[in-house]
Image (tube, rainbow, N blue to C red; front, top):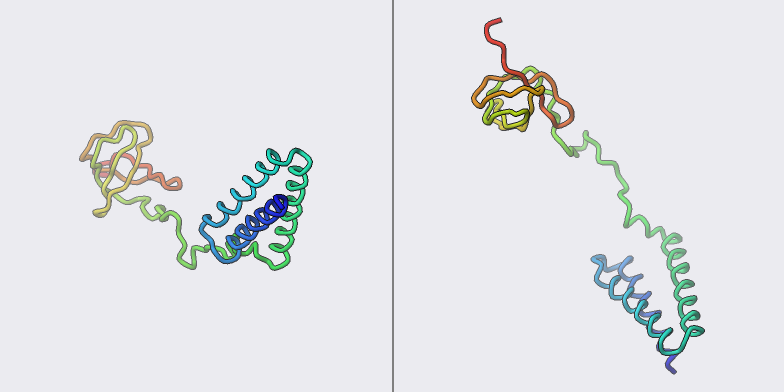
Length: 159
């Protein structure tokens, strides 16, 4: 009768894992199911010995393979995979494009040694110089952007 409970608990564990994948996302039922299976396998080794423990492990491995076949057959992997592209044209932007700041003039809010804060058109930005020290409240010009890095130089007066 005890072996019946081992099989029953392993089945209950895998049913909980399957429900996690199909109906109840959120990890709780899947974790509980995995813990039931793991504890049952450990219990079967200690209570009934290696032979019954290995049979329980083999039964669990067969259920894992069966679970993967069911997931693949009914195309349940789609719940785990992003199916559409996040294109810039659709409004998905991870970082704003700073290339439009090239040539703009502003002022340093903090010292740039070589990086610090600048103010351009009332908006604060993190920026860096080309290596030289630029004191606070200096007039600067953006000379280039590299990704999200703004490179500035001191604005040249009266050309």
